[in-house]
Image 1: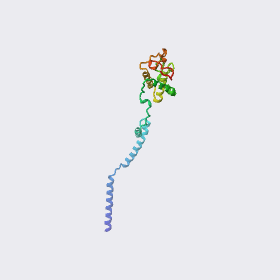
Image 2: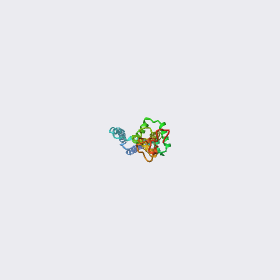
Image 3: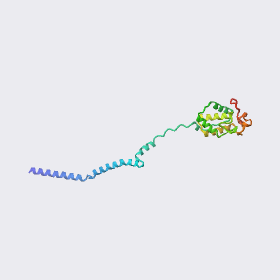
Image 4: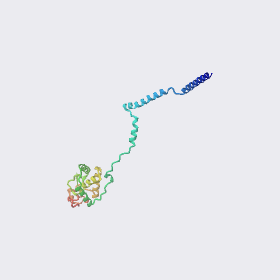
Length: 210
């Protein structure tokens, strides 16, 4: 009798356990394995899409992070400004100033490139004492010409002047040296022995500037 009751109880327990296992199984997602497989396929598809796009000439979006990093990198330090940016040089047009410029002519030596700048800047300015010649050469090395050449050498080497700046500076100095202007023919009418401020060449001897 006792054995029959134990067998029935055991049978009922097994049946209950089976029922509970079936009920829990109904809550599971039968397509979980399939979804995982699909996800793996999708991952493979994404991984291979970028090279394909690149092969077709389209941009690959995986480079966006690198581009952003490059754009936020600090900019390189700018080169120091040249001395030519310090502003125009003022001239007073005195004999002492002319003597100083002649001293520059005697002491400053230009490189071939610097000489090119000087010649180009002064070639478009007629020589004040002989307008048929450019100031770059004049007809002779009078004191006015040597002062213009010395001023040019100083502005190029010390101030970093270029062609346009030097051209304007030479005109400004001539205007200060003789506010009344030059006739352009002083060399043909005795002007070599006249002071610069009197429409002359300022003399020929740099030790005696007129």
